[in-house]
Image (cartoon, rainbow, N blue to C red; front, side, top):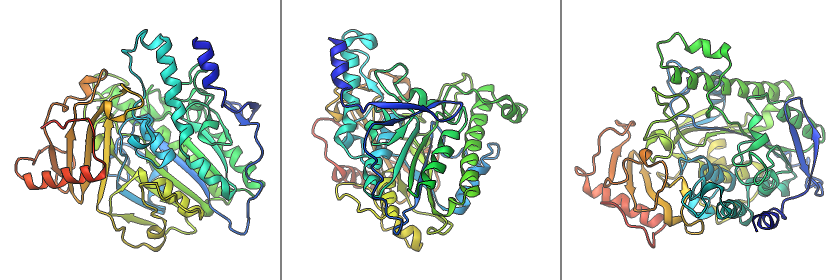
Length: 471
């Protein structure tokens, strides 16, 4: 039964031909007609390089004020483009967060709310039902348009590298890619794709060169497994952090960040060397935050990854396009929900009306204020209880309006990582981020009117039908 189900679930995968592209990995292309045949050189749309770091705290960059971590490549990018130091991802868990970046939809809309099916299913993780639900979750990507799909009418050729949970790269609309995906071995979150960065970036630079030589615009998804665990940086970088009195686990994490930054430098240098930089839109965001456990390597602390706190959902977000976007530090709030519409705006493609984010391209090019003061987020359990009902595992929602942030918890089902959700039994938490960006003082009792006002913002965002708020 399982064999037949998997066969049925993967029948829509495009057949692929595999060819060697570098000495570090293999790159595949689906056997489909060339979707870039109608490229119009007159329009000259920008190339797009999307850089996504993995498990990276919002303040662990030199340009964000960190006194130890070295990120010269991202510092340079931040100084050359439009940089939002108050950027956010709606969901602080990698799979739903990446699905949001790929689709421009919130997790409750694209339906990929957690990383895995419930481990409590009959047969557990090795059971037939678990495998069936894994395939059904992946199939959700087939029901929505991805950024790679949306770019095709403008002639873009796309490449997937790094982390990609949703089956084969072709299911994300990519023309070429590294990830084979479930049910292939190692297909949970990237298989061959996870080699990128840690084993060089030549697959990407070769793709850029080839596509540019053909006179076509490219879209690259660079989502390396960095600084994500395992924290195994090269000794030449780790040595820089080993004599600073840091816990070994923290030194390794910091060294991973510098290693990741180094790979970005390789890509940025290549764009500059080949003359592609001025007409390449570079977008940077982290999928979620991270605070290293000082007592245990490769582990994180509560109130970071999987949490609604700043160390879970905050990230710098950058847009660099030297030919169009002047260098600027933006004071406004922004969210990864804005990335798809902004990229489409830069490419000269109409933004679908159903996307909830904002096309920031006009404000970035003209350096005008962004007319928005409120952003939203939501968090679900790591394991999806009812894969067709997002509310079933809803644990919290949050809203930021100007400098006020409200976090409220819900009674969704959670069967995993309970220790990282120690705040679930608490009532509303209200913080003033202007003077408390580490959320140390809950002001909910002092400002009940603000709590009620922000609760209504959440209701207006989207009303719940089943979940009850923890008061």
